[in-house]
Image (tube, rainbow over the protein chains, first blue to last red):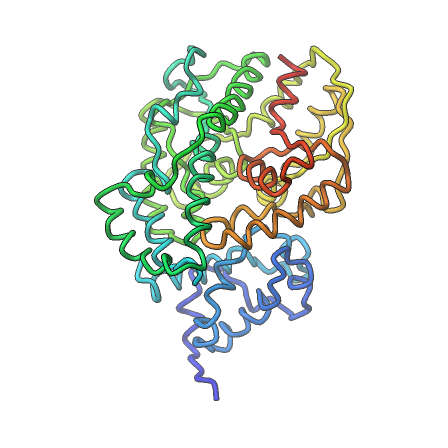
Length: 100
Length: 318
């Protein structure tokens, strides 16, 4: 059973730019990702929104493998700020996990 | 084991905070390209390199060392390396550049300066105060260190009376034009890429190159800065027939470079995929970003000829 933390999204969200909730789970981002990252961003953002903190922390490599190239953003029909959302996750990980 | 994420980012962030660059290089290495060009120090308008082209030979040296460490037991020692690096700049010791490569990348900056002069632009250079923009720290989400560094960059620009910056590469363009206004209070510097300046000045070609090239758009110019027309206009005026690969313009495919600092093998695989697309479109390719240039050249293994766009422009316009 997953441990849910409803405050998690507020910990990750640093500004109104963080718009993971706009994602409608269509999967275009995963289909066009040049790194072949299937998880990002639709599942990962869903984990954040649901407060599945452990799931997010288990996916460090995925979060830092993203090229921030915005190929997904250019194709996203919901205008999700994918690159900025990933940067927010990195900022969170740097602070909370790596103590940077 | 892979490179430890936290300690690797920690080394880069420590370097930026302590030594003003994620991979510190000497002032003489950073400014050598400008020797003999008699560029005035500072002024209202400056060419700003952000040390990007100068850093590439060092990044290449560092990546060789990282590739040996990645997936080996040595990766465990990155934490110790980070501790020592705070006192002794070991990242520089790990990144010994090849002098021939330094010469090649410095000549690209000379081309840019020559083109700007040819277009009648009056500009200076900040020499040792032309600092790295912090682009990698931004990408990795080390925002606190980046914000302090951005303030140092801005203070240097103000100290020299700079009002207009002409950038050499897409990452520095994006940082100084689109990121710094969000993180530096009162930021008031106007920023344009040298490619935009040349196109705006309507520079006239002296020679018709009569050649054909495949264009590799930078993700940052294409999707962050929406800069797609200027480079094509300049090439067309130089008599260069531009061939578009299957992924191009707004939908250009990344060279993989941004993954290099943490996942060199993934970066190489991404570069290989892009090289295959470029090869299918032709044998002469141009880039407009030093990171794209080095990553694609490495992946191409000499099967295609890849050059910076400034080399073509200098041949036609200077």
